[in-house]
Image (cartoon, rainbow, N blue to C red; front, side, top):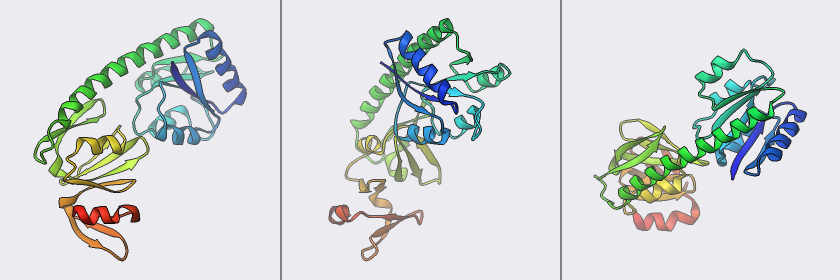
Length: 246
């Protein structure tokens, strides 16, 4: 099943497009419709979809500004617009397709086929990544390099070089000793599984820290100070387990 969302400031356009998509394909599911692009951006932080049908001209922000606010794009983008002057810019944005309103049925069917192909290619890439990640899990040595998926490639870093990891919905940030920050299209739980358990501890739903990077712990206020001077909260439910580990 192909799951998509629709973003358009005109409710009638959303209703019409949803009808066309579901009427001409049993393989398409419209998960959500948005007249407010900011709401769509927030939705994509915590949910994954195969495609986004995106209007270009919207009063709050245009379709290109919308994409600038998406930190990681692993879905197909299909621009829908009544104007044809944006085609070149759409190509630069690596859009999967560009549909002119009113949308032609044959063009829509071709677009659906492209989304299916895009999803198949993405799943193959993810499968290969998962195989490499599973190999990384076999070694739990702090000096062993682990594979971190980022921007369509794998970055290899030593576990001992990681200070902490911070959750952001379906994604997370990894902070390194050299002040570099990696933005990863994985949940914090998935990154936690890659790292050696004796070295890393989840002190909070949003934070996973390297225990060797802890400089101070303030019991009264319930936070730690790491080697980069970052203050991190320790949740009450994890306080005792943290003290046992440290």
